[in-house]
Length: 448
Image (cartoon, rainbow, N blue to C red; front, side, top):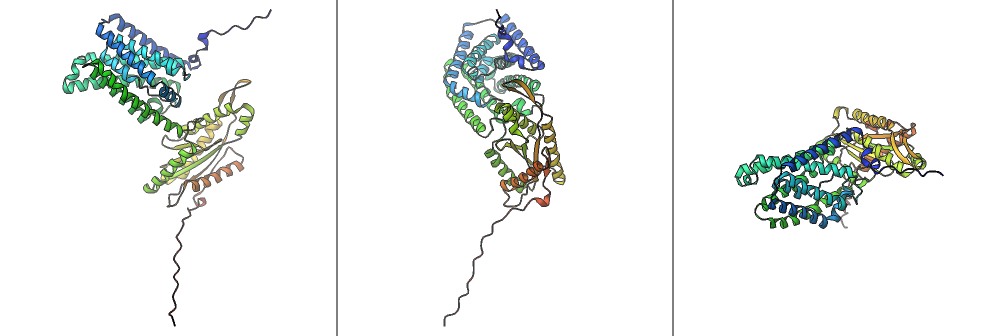
């Protein structure tokens, strides 16, 4: 009798094992540090009834906040895949400022466990990432609590400048520990990550600091009366919805498959860039790129594999341009790049060099994909590139420039693909300007 295949142990199916060894090492070290520090805080804690009650109040407030905003948080979790500012910081930071480290960490564990079941798990977020996020918050809270105790405790907050400095130092330490640990995890998992990937965009940092400020103000209020916790709900819910609006707006301008700008968003920003270049008398250039024989990928391996290839090519394009360059996807397998501020003396040469780097990088791609026949690697990829300098004379439009770059793209296709063609300056037509018709003057004959 044939034996049925043995099921793999649940632990071996954890998503964390799909990470690189260096990532797992960082996760284990950071989480082990958190376990040791939390254990040490509980070994020396002296519990008081007031402290326990306040911990319960903050944990309950965090749970109620999660319930009130569950729908918003789940939507935010889906649209903010790469960077996600957790507004529960208001409760965890207040706990770090007011409670002994042991009670503060217990409050954080309760809140984040509830968040996992109500927000993160329904969004199918990996458990190991949630665990690491919780760990960074625990370590940040312990560090902030050390600053509070070292500066004289909560009684020092009423001492004018010294109080502001003490509370500000605790805020900065909490933010720094949390951000640096997350940046470390991102850096080891994505060695070529940009600063915005490591620490978030400026507006995301601003939201995090605003939440920390609300947490600090909540802590100050709770030193007067615990009933002030009720006043924190309206600001945090309003902030949550404002952040949600920002993230939805960003999602509306971002292509879901590649993370690049959509055609509409790119066109709008490119128009603004041409206007700026005209005002500043600076150089501007454009590339149009088309992945060669992409239909074969979809037909052979399926559309999911094709989407994975598109994402890899988008990453390759982004890696070879500057952070301020505009990169968009114009449907299908076509991409477009606008490059402002190239050195004026050799702008055309720089444009061709960028195009060649992109072309070469795409030929070196090896994209792992899952297919009905099992995992495989797609590595026979190439891209054709057309480019042109952008004229900044009055009347120049994105459509006119793109028509020139598109013509060069087809020249590259006709040359056998996997090629770069850049328009020479004399091949770039001047923009057509409409002149108003001159009024016709009819001489009147004198009457007889």
